[in-house]
Length: 466
Image (cartoon, rainbow, N blue to C red; front, top):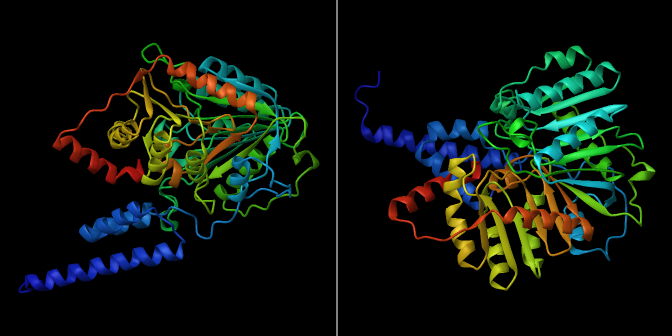
């Protein structure tokens, strides 16, 4: 059938298909209101031009970055005067996030043992409702114990809802949910893999970690941070020590912000529209109590909120920036802001694991580390796996939660961070950082050879997906 067709015919046909594929990319990006980083956009266009038969299906499956017509923060709004507030508060509110809310009984978990004890304490204290969202629920001792406690609470009449990321549920092995649902609990997967590829959601992951109990009652409580609910985040094993991570729990009106975000994600996972409820009187912050703000980041937000706060913080910092992340693959703007902060005399400390659990991330980070070190920043490599996510800026801001300092967390994932502005609690985060830094070795730059430089560049080309 195709005999006798000239090479020019096939070349023309290939060019036409490539042009149509690029046009599809442009139209889909416009219709879906996608605002990609220039490097990501260039990467997609080059991929489509070189391999349109593979790249176009890949884009349709995995290329979505923002949900179409993303709306502002899904919380009930309270009009408070923030003109005289600090720059972190003003910046966060300007990005559509909520005003500060007060909290009390703040506890920072400095190791896995404390974190696990607090987790059990929060779950055991639930009397009315348990709302739990996590990326990974392990099929191990910790995961099984969580399910057992949820089942026991459901049997006692507590309303239990568990939201688990679709991809995360596969990474650690799908936990057995039949027992929970048989006990009366509710379970929902957030964007099950390949469940809605034509909607462009396949590559979107809910990386948020939220545990809220009794949100509608005075004993409401929040457990949050960077820990997934699996053994390596708490106790480890005989062969592998527990990962170093960071989490916290607290009480008070601030819990309502986390609960509103859970309700929003729960409604989206179930295909329903979320409607913000009128705020209760306790939403207002107490004047004599510390306060903080939740920052939601991801496809459900108009702006790249956590990223924007970090870039702003790098330019506003006066004395010190302390950062902890397992994966460091920043974009050029964030890297430039951190380098400039170091050059103008700000002490920039970055703590990373010497070897993380993602080899590609370790390769991709090298160029950024060399740039940062050459600018005068101090980079610390821990001898163990560090999974914590923390940014401390001077004595005015501590960001803690689920977002890593890589492009996936900052531009693709559903993430959440809490912005603390209470000086004593900021100092507690800073003290934790300094204690973790004591066992780390200083990073020493080296000049890569040609092959290594090419390999790092190739991995960075895929860095947006790391």
